[in-house]
Image (cartoon, rainbow, N blue to C red):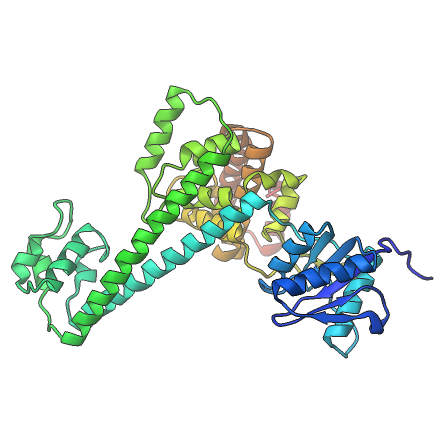
Length: 449
């Protein structure tokens, strides 16, 4: 039985780094190869118009597809971006021509589904956010190099101070590069809030001053300052863009005070501006009400997702897109595998950081849930499960315009179930039952857990 053609005017493009192969039908004679320059993109659009093509499917290959995707969209085509898992060919032979024809065939039969793509504003914000993350990585890299240079000179400033690149650490490094070598004098430069005494700090500043390591220390300090200034400039651009596209909402005086209190708790490398107010105006809810959600997490949600979260019809579809749900593979009535899908999602990574911080806290609404999963399957599985629960809470707060307090009923139920489990475990230990009696007791009492 032949399959029905859904998209009769469909084309398939095999995207490459130096060449794009275009197939307009299943005839190999009509397959053409084009370059990757802008004029070649115009030639592709003209070639597709000549064959009356209205929709195009292409495989997401690195970042090579982005410029061609935008140019074809501006030319009036309906462009579909698909992942490589959908376009795998079962045949052994593989060439660019065969791949292009196979993509065209799948698209004409309606067997391909497009990937989630943000709008133009979110793409611009995403570019700034990715550049910001790169700057933070460079700052961390040169901080470690400064720490290494000091350690090789046996100047153990990393032991005396918590952060070498903090206020006290940078002051001491600048004095060392200025020619100061007296440990007692260098110890007096620390901030008054430093926990270690001046004597202990002075003991850590006795070292051998090697010329090549001092040169490396100066170069790393200059680069550290350069990337720090670049990070501040990037934050200014992001703030300006957020203010421009954030809808205006009325904010009470009490909320203003709450937003200012959030700004006092910022961590290092957090946004230079107070993101709590634009985040509330953007999403219509206070995401900082979830303890453990940092300024960087909210900035990631605003720049990487924004109002595109409304494209997900349910919270489950949102969690599935984040790849935080089990990918169950069932055969013969048995679950062969339930591992989470491979792949990196920036928002999922940020939510995993939040879940990890929840596991380190002493009191949190989601801590009983985290401990219950960690007790059964380990900490890694608990981080993923808690990140999924946070994603569902965030979706409900934004899409349904709910406060965090309205989601605490389910969380309180998790607390009660955890307390119930702990109490039954204590009873089992006191009763000294055998394994069969324990299984019956667990099934009868805590099956929902």
